[in-house]
Length: 179
Image 1 (cartoon, helix red, strand yellow):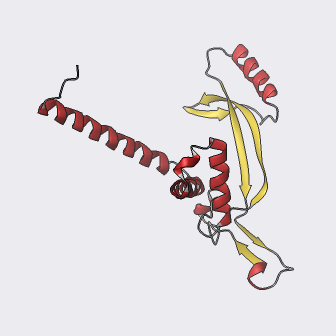
Image 2 (cartoon, one colour):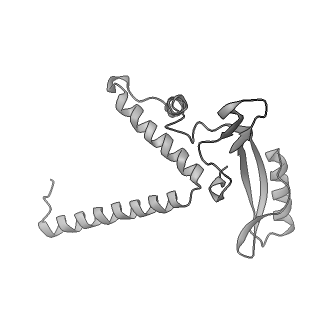
């Protein structure tokens, strides 16, 4: 049997739901505030295009796999680089992934050695570190680096093509703090 809530219970529930919504909004704002301009741009571009693509789809198509949705959103963003510049950036080099072993030093996690190309070598270094100093905290961290072209100059080109500044900045500034 379902019982109908009384007015004071309704108010408690509504207060609880409002508090939870406010907490989620604060957490989202804090998370977005922790991102670089570039990362925030990526989240923005993908979220907006995902929303747009969702509105354009026929509901009878069903729900696509995540990988299909991601490919659709990226393709749509790259088709309109002026509207979605964070997704359309030119990479200077391929993204590189490596692994490092870290331990806290003076309250901050710090690398204790080189970046390993092979995760097994990082795991060996990690096991060795734990064995040598089991009282200390240790972790293996995957490091992904990318290099994005912020500006370029081509002396052989003429006119505006000779000097290109990426969509995310003109002259070198702190805003170039992007992956």
